[in-house]
Image (cartoon, rainbow, N blue to C red; front, side):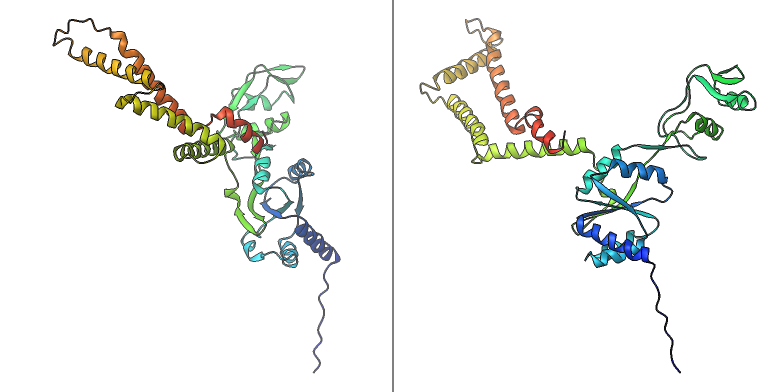
Length: 334
């Protein structure tokens, strides 16, 4: 008995879609998968326009993307866990952290729906609402919004806050907010994963606090500089500070042990006089020394010690934030 096989015909648009995706996968080294379930199509269009020249956004079927990825030589097994539900695929040669930072700054808003909480202070502004007087007046009253009727229209007499950030938005207020064009709910594109030159970066690892990151770099730089000074690492900027520190330490040691040279004689005698006055001051109440001990003589020595401590502390810290800020700002595009 003859077996009849029927070849499955693949839609032309699917073939063309796979070819287009494969071309993009070869052209760009970073692919970002974002969840667009419930995401307004018009807002996605706004993002697409904002990212023009930076990235391309493509909404397609997961199966077609998977076929194209295999054809382009990608390790699809790394991406399979994320190929569920409706997705948008972002193709770029930018750093994925840069894309996440851009998207986090690009705020989108939508109208409130039942059950939403306010992402910002929700204010009904004073003025003509354009709404005819009638049953709506009772809603304004329920929301404790002061109104008046003028020319048959409802006018709000003063700005009124009906919800603060984090507060539930009153369901009765939703039609009024829509009528007034107020969008109190923020939305953002939820990134699932980034695939960067074969490296998988989950979406929750792409969000960084830039200020904290700068602070961490500054601290690391200052710690490294302090260590370099301590070990006299042989580079000009470090050796200059190391030499100054060594000279101060040598002078301090010479003053302590009484080693006299033309360079140390002043420090030796100053230290000796300071110690003598300190001793005299300590025993002056018990022994009659026959001399008047000036109390102010202790101050210069104490001040000198404090200056030395402050100088050493600055060396440990290395350059100040202002001194290295220029380099950091250029690093972060500031």
